Length: 461
Image 1 (cartoon, rainbow, N blue to C red):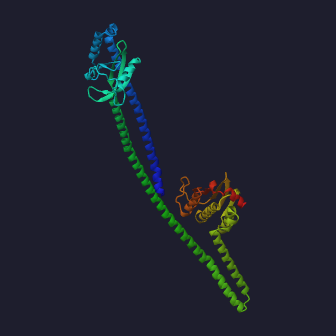
Image 2 (tube, rainbow, N blue to C red; image 1 turned 180 degrees about the vertical axis):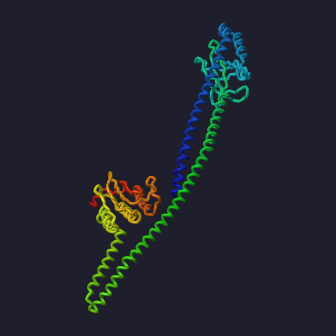
Image 3 (spheres, rainbow, N blue to C red; image 1 turned 180 degrees about the horizontal axis):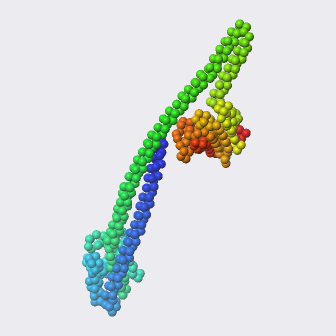
């Protein structure tokens, strides 16, 4: 996976996961709350139905109480009168009272006359419940509620019914009434359907919000990525061109040094040797002096070669460390420019990685070149110290500076300063530059990560 794809994934995947998690939580919470409400609603409806049939049963018992209480066990006239009263107690198309004896024979059934006088003790509903037998057993045990399936008069279909039955023990009768529950279940089903519709609407709303949000994030990430990539490509091209220019400048400098210095010295040595040879052949007295001048010219060429090699890579940095290398750099700088230079390294602990030491040395080398070429300074100082295990280097001069006078910021960032900053950035360090008309102060700060590991320190020691 490329970096661009990783950035897009890191931007979009957490957003999608968060949206899905929030949606799932809201949906679950809403569904759970709705189910609880529906269950409570259903229970309340059933309680209301139970209260209704209890009240109706008590009303019917009150209507027959006088006749039943004064009748005997085999008073057929009283039985017919009570049956007629119960048969007339009508409270709607599906509301009626029924009466069975203990043997299962139907005595009263206003809505289904074909049941009158028949025995229904073995009648079962679609669920296998022996309805009449269960109603008789419930009445004998003191009365109560029983739920079963029964044909609904208004629709002719089987529906759930809740009945309350009591017994008239003197006559061995079971009296009861009931209500059908299909309307309760219909309202519950409607509530469930409404819940599912609400959940679906919630998903639609979340989708309408989430999809554009994801698209916006995706588009933004793509635009930012493309923009950063173009900038990075531009900076890479610029840096590549700078490296090429720096290489060409270094080659040109070496070519000039070789042509103007070493080459001229070697040509002088060759002429001196030729002249000395001719004088020796002709027994001229000053042949030895000519040879000495050739030796001096050769010594100059050797010094020039050493200077060039020192500029390219000082061996003292590898052999004796950063402090010694900077001291040699200061000595050569004084010898070359005459600018008063001093170095202080009393508080510095030599513990940097070789690459970090090289970086500080190159920064100092570049700073010295800038002072020599541009500052017009008469004094230069270098200070090395360690602060809580972190290497610090400060180079200051009393030259004209190159700031614009606002916060000490440089007017422009040349290749040398950019190279310094990139060397420090490689080690996650900082390069602070403060420059004004009174001079320039350059401070390089390296982190602890630029130090050698403990085992490396032991090997060096």
